[in-house]
Amino acid sequence: MARHPGHAPDPRHSSALTLESLRLLLDRPERNRRGLFWAEGCRSFFSALENGWPIRTVVYCPKLLHSRQTWRALETSAADAFLKVSPEEFHLLTRRSEPDGIGVVCEQRWLPLIEQTPDHGDLWVALDSARTPGNLGTILRTCAATGVRGVMLIGGEADPYDASAIRSSMGAIFSVPLIRTSARSLAGWKVRRDVLFVGATPNTPLDYRRGRYRTPLVLMMGSERSGLRDRQIALCDRLVRLPMTAKVDSLNLAVATSLMLYEVRRAEGG
Image (cartoon, rainbow, N blue to C red; front, top):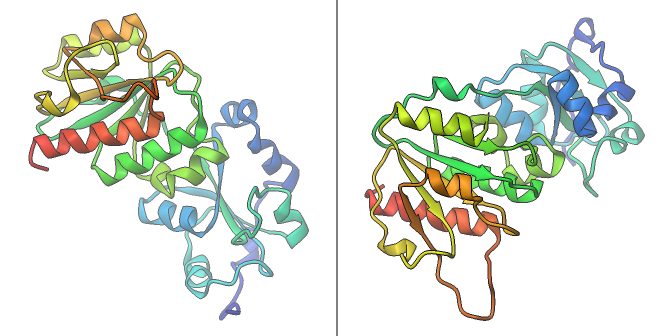
């Protein structure tokens, strides 16, 4: 078992954030009210550092934190503040059976749609009524892998700052830009820009492997339950389907999005 090789963070930078106020961030209304979120684990800590994401507070438990690399990074971290907790206190924050003993509190980031200026090679994913946090996190991870410029969330159902979404993203929450928008705003944005909108739906004869793709492109994906709504379908320049046997009538949203993203990149030679 690795031991802490050096000194703890400077106590002069101890956090004003209390354990109780931190626990409140596990609930979406409080996250949205304060514009903050809690991301647990060494991967989240390093992803925040690597992507230059300002850290409001690092929460750490010396008895649970056994990574020498993490301790070294913690000692030199430019976080605003630190909160040292006991194992019992850290277990109040975690949903893992074997927690790493570290997590970060950061500000939520939402980019304005109007600032998205398309260029060749740019690819966005627009999710219509996505509901499951785990699916959303997995999609963010695939978006990071395929070089997606950003994820547009239509409607307010999905919460990318949910603990399940953050965990499924495997650190991608810190590298994939997020844009909250509406179908109306997206339609106005499209009018002024040369962007191809492609939607995935079972109600079209065109196989996704035969679709013609070019960037900049917005890939529109609907919920598993109802698919793309009519207003989002009307935005699309092209509709494609993912073929399935009669034994199933839908794919997991994260799986379907992954197939589409890799096909778009393959088609453009990426």
